[in-house]
Length: 125
Image 1 (tube, rainbow, N blue to C red):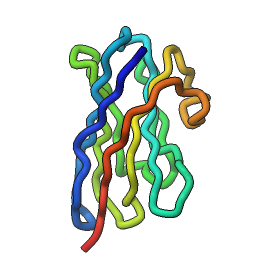
Image 2: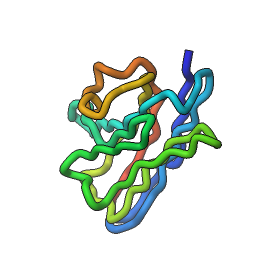
Image 3: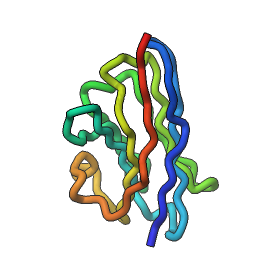
Image 4: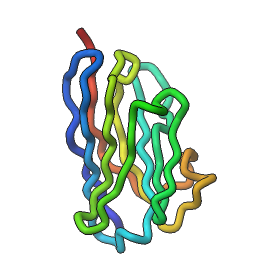
Protein backbone atom coordinates (compact mmCIF):
# COMPACT_ATOMS: atom_id res chain seq x y z
CA UNK A 1 0.00 0.00 0.00
CA UNK A 2 1.43 3.34 -1.08
CA UNK A 3 0.52 6.57 0.64
CA UNK A 4 0.87 9.89 -1.18
CA UNK A 5 0.81 13.29 0.48
CA UNK A 6 0.78 16.45 -1.61
CA UNK A 7 1.88 19.85 -0.41
CA UNK A 8 2.86 23.24 -1.74
CA UNK A 9 -0.43 24.61 -2.96
CA UNK A 10 -1.51 28.14 -2.27
CA UNK A 11 -2.84 31.43 -3.55
CA UNK A 12 -0.69 33.20 -6.12
CA UNK A 13 -0.96 35.91 -8.73
CA UNK A 14 -0.79 35.33 -12.49
CA UNK A 15 2.81 34.92 -13.59
CA UNK A 16 3.96 33.58 -10.24
CA UNK A 17 5.52 30.20 -9.58
CA UNK A 18 4.77 27.34 -7.19
CA UNK A 19 6.36 24.00 -6.55
CA UNK A 20 4.14 21.13 -5.53
CA UNK A 21 5.56 18.13 -3.72
CA UNK A 22 4.25 14.59 -3.46
CA UNK A 23 5.81 12.54 -0.69
CA UNK A 24 5.40 8.78 -1.09
CA UNK A 25 5.67 6.02 1.47
CA UNK A 26 4.88 2.35 1.72
CA UNK A 27 6.44 1.12 -1.48
CA UNK A 28 9.71 0.89 -3.38
CA UNK A 29 9.69 4.40 -4.73
CA UNK A 30 12.10 3.80 -7.58
CA UNK A 31 9.77 1.25 -9.14
CA UNK A 32 6.84 3.61 -9.43
CA UNK A 33 5.77 6.07 -12.05
CA UNK A 34 3.85 9.15 -10.99
CA UNK A 35 1.36 11.51 -12.45
CA UNK A 36 -0.03 14.90 -11.55
CA UNK A 37 -3.67 15.51 -12.33
CA UNK A 38 -5.90 18.47 -11.58
CA UNK A 39 -9.56 19.25 -11.27
CA UNK A 40 -10.72 22.82 -11.61
CA UNK A 41 -14.05 24.22 -10.44
CA UNK A 42 -16.83 22.63 -12.44
CA UNK A 43 -14.38 20.69 -14.57
CA UNK A 44 -13.42 17.07 -14.98
CA UNK A 45 -10.12 15.79 -13.73
CA UNK A 46 -7.36 16.19 -16.29
CA UNK A 47 -3.81 15.04 -16.77
CA UNK A 48 -1.07 17.56 -16.12
CA UNK A 49 2.27 15.75 -16.14
CA UNK A 50 3.75 12.31 -15.58
CA UNK A 51 7.11 10.67 -15.02
CA UNK A 52 8.08 7.03 -15.36
CA UNK A 53 10.45 5.10 -13.13
CA UNK A 54 13.13 5.73 -15.75
CA UNK A 55 12.40 9.49 -15.67
CA UNK A 56 10.66 9.77 -19.02
CA UNK A 57 8.27 12.69 -18.79
CA UNK A 58 5.04 13.65 -20.47
CA UNK A 59 3.00 16.84 -20.29
CA UNK A 60 -0.41 18.12 -21.19
CA UNK A 61 -0.25 20.65 -24.03
CA UNK A 62 -1.70 23.31 -21.76
CA UNK A 63 1.32 23.22 -19.43
CA UNK A 64 4.20 22.41 -21.77
CA UNK A 65 7.03 24.87 -21.34
CA UNK A 66 5.62 26.14 -18.04
CA UNK A 67 5.51 23.08 -15.77
CA UNK A 68 8.26 20.59 -14.99
CA UNK A 69 7.84 17.25 -13.27
CA UNK A 70 10.79 15.66 -11.51
CA UNK A 71 11.55 13.00 -8.95
CA UNK A 72 14.06 12.56 -6.16
CA UNK A 73 14.38 8.88 -5.39
CA UNK A 74 16.52 9.58 -2.34
CA UNK A 75 13.71 11.64 -0.81
CA UNK A 76 10.81 9.51 -2.12
CA UNK A 77 9.31 12.69 -3.51
CA UNK A 78 7.92 13.86 -6.83
CA UNK A 79 7.77 17.54 -7.68
CA UNK A 80 5.77 19.71 -10.02
CA UNK A 81 7.42 23.04 -10.68
CA UNK A 82 4.82 25.43 -12.03
CA UNK A 83 5.95 28.67 -13.63
CA UNK A 84 4.07 31.45 -15.38
CA UNK A 85 0.87 30.44 -13.66
CA UNK A 86 -2.43 31.46 -15.21
CA UNK A 87 -5.90 31.77 -13.72
CA UNK A 88 -6.92 28.69 -15.68
CA UNK A 89 -4.38 26.69 -13.68
CA UNK A 90 -6.60 27.12 -10.64
CA UNK A 91 -7.51 23.63 -9.46
CA UNK A 92 -7.04 20.92 -6.91
CA UNK A 93 -3.87 19.07 -7.86
CA UNK A 94 -3.54 15.37 -7.20
CA UNK A 95 -0.54 13.08 -7.23
CA UNK A 96 -0.99 9.50 -8.42
CA UNK A 97 1.29 6.48 -8.48
CA UNK A 98 1.48 3.18 -10.28
CA UNK A 99 4.20 0.57 -10.21
CA UNK A 100 5.81 0.17 -13.60
CA UNK A 101 3.49 2.48 -15.51
CA UNK A 102 4.69 2.95 -19.07
CA UNK A 103 5.13 6.22 -20.91
CA UNK A 104 2.08 5.80 -23.13
CA UNK A 105 -0.18 5.32 -20.10
CA UNK A 106 1.01 8.27 -18.04
CA UNK A 107 -1.91 10.46 -19.06
CA UNK A 108 -4.60 7.90 -18.23
CA UNK A 109 -5.98 8.31 -14.71
CA UNK A 110 -7.41 4.78 -14.77
CA UNK A 111 -3.89 3.35 -14.88
CA UNK A 112 -2.96 4.61 -11.43
CA UNK A 113 -3.54 2.56 -8.30
CA UNK A 114 -2.78 5.16 -5.65
CA UNK A 115 -3.88 8.75 -5.18
CA UNK A 116 -3.15 11.54 -2.74
CA UNK A 117 -5.68 13.80 -1.10
CA UNK A 118 -4.84 16.81 -3.23
CA UNK A 119 -3.52 20.31 -2.73
CA UNK A 120 -5.26 23.45 -3.91
CA UNK A 121 -3.79 26.05 -6.21
CA UNK A 122 -5.54 29.35 -6.82
CA UNK A 123 -4.20 31.80 -9.37
CA UNK A 124 -5.90 35.17 -9.23
CA UNK A 125 -5.11 38.85 -9.28
